[in-house]
Image 1 (cartoon, protein in one colour):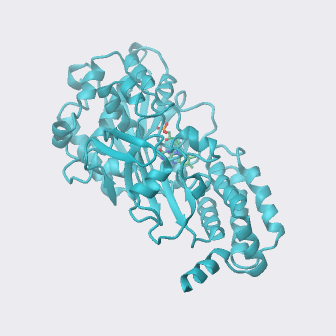
Image 2 (cartoon, protein in one colour):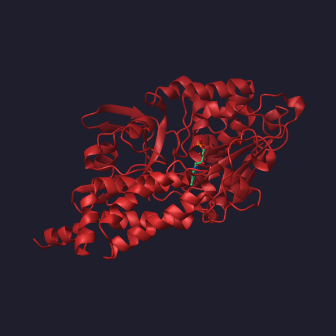
Image 3 (tube, helix red, strand yellow):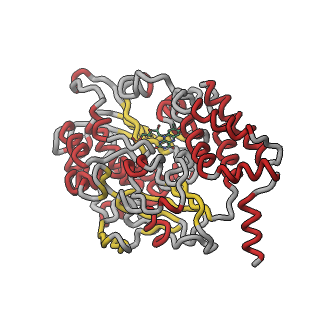
Amino acid sequence: MRIRTKRDPQSYTFPGYGTEAFPSLLLRGAGDLDNWKIQAYEGRHEGYQALRKALASAPAEVTEEVKRSGLRGRGGAGFPTGLKWTFMPKDTEEKKVTRYVVCNADEGEPGTFKDRAILEYNPHQLIEGMIIAGWAMQCRMGFIYVRGEFKWLVDKLDAAIQEAREQGYLGKNILGSGWDFDLLTYRGAGAYICGEETALLNSLEGRRGEPRVKPPFPAQVGAYGQPTTVNNVETFACVPPILRMGGAAFAGIGSPNNSGTRIFGISGHVKRPGLYELPMGTPLRFLVEELAGGTSSGRPIKAICPGGSSAPFLTAEDLDTPMDFDAMKAKGTMAGSGGVVVMDDSVCMVQVALRLAHFYAHESCGQCTPCREGCNWMEMILHRIEHGQGRMEDLDLLASLTPRINLRTLCPLGDAAAGPIESILKKWRPEFEHHVKTGHCLAQESHLLVGAH
Ligand SMILES: Cc1cc2nc3c(=O)[nH]c(=O)nc-3n(C[C@H](O)[C@H](O)[C@H](O)COP(=O)(O)O)c2cc1C
């Protein structure tokens, strides 16, 4: 895995977009094997200085600083983090309402592989961010819900938590503040739905991982029935730099309303796949062409999935779109989890749609009929089109299915399944028609033809 963080501060030239210099905030030292240790974090990266600063301030002031930073959640939806923290009950210490802070380290979205780099190379930044969040929301306990397949990362995370305890950053009377807080890791069992925050809470409690009906929202009734805030790994990791540099300075990085840096993961048909930390709002073209080197085959780009598999597809015409929540939304897609997948013109989009439909049909928890039945129907229709048994009316049937799944489910898994398939059918409909008419794949036929010359 390529991790572009060696230069600190990094300085990239944006051809045609001016020059930007920015600090690496999230992956500092990533790639250095000892970077996960507390000595490296304290010694090289001002580790736990932000916690000291936070503990010297009132909890509400810390939340205000996070609000000032404009930080938006990196788990997918881009919800403002400081605002989310204010939803927790405002009652005082004396009332002793047990509340929890939970880190979503499920990272199940296909095409996404950023959180694991923080867990592997910079776990103390996540831990420090969670302790600060715990202080801001006056929690006594935090959980890190980690995807089951990340077993080796949980061992490392547990070791890092133990290091933090030994230094007095976790446990009783943290740094003499009189406040107690501790962290526990919890391994999921490997279901995509357990990344949805309320399914995650059910799973954390040992129940079946199914989304809950909302309201009540987790800030009212969360883990074990208590007020809870769930944030993504990268979101928490942004908190120490925010406190160190100040919310206003963080807000000055990135594009308007989309502050800070973000770890973009790029994969697929590119020369240099990997993780790149860039300011929010960096043009997609810079990531795809400059950093990742364009297509490995030298062939034209056909499709780009800009934010994990739930994001509707873009084409090469959209390469100048800034990678932030608002600009991606304006293009009819989403910045999502920051996982960019590039496909060259050898790819059959019917096959891509089928692969996605299979994933979502398999991962639907089955609670809501439109998602459970709809995802299966999408897969069945796409399966017959891909295998030469499609009918022309299947295309309209498929087009009529997606809006009947979208926004009709308890959680956004239904939308995540419908959106990308809808976009593929809209943008590459002739490929579907060719499949139905000839039983063959247009993309692969032309790929072979060009390859033969
Ligand atoms: C099906 C599904 C899967 C999700 N998977 C993840 C995930 O793996 N990691 C994550 O942080 N958020 C995931 N989310 C989003 C979470 O529900 C939640 O919005 C997020 O953890 C909030 O954190 P943030 O505000 O810091 O972004 C998923 C949502 C859905 C609907």
